[in-house]
Image (cartoon, rainbow, N blue to C red):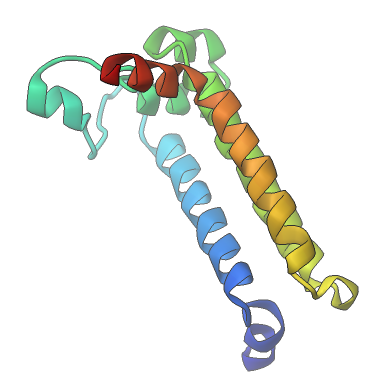
Length: 142
C-alpha cells in the first residue's frame, strides 16, 4: 500500500485529480440513490429555501437522477440544462481518469506537459457547457 502511495499519489496533481474524480463519482452516486419520484433528497435548493424563488439550477438533482435512470425527457422537464451539465461532469470524470493513468506512466512523469492541456480543456468545457449560467450571471450583473 505504501508503494502505491509513492508511485500513484505522490504528487499534488495526482492528488487533486483523485479528489476531483472522487467528488464527481459521489455526485453520480447521490443521483443514483435518490429518486425524483420519492423526492427524498437530503440537500435542497438553497436559492429556493432562502429567497423562495427558482433559479436556473433548480431541478438539477432531479434531472441528474433521471439521467442516471436513462429517463432523458424527464430530466429535461426538471431542468432544461440538466443533460449538458451532466455531460460536463461525465467528461470531466473521464478526463480525470485519463490524466491519472497517463501520468502514472514513467515516460509521462513530467506533469508540466499535461497540466496546461488539462487546464485548457477543462476551461473550454466549462465555458461551453455552463454557457447559459454564466450568460445569466453576466446579464444580471450588467
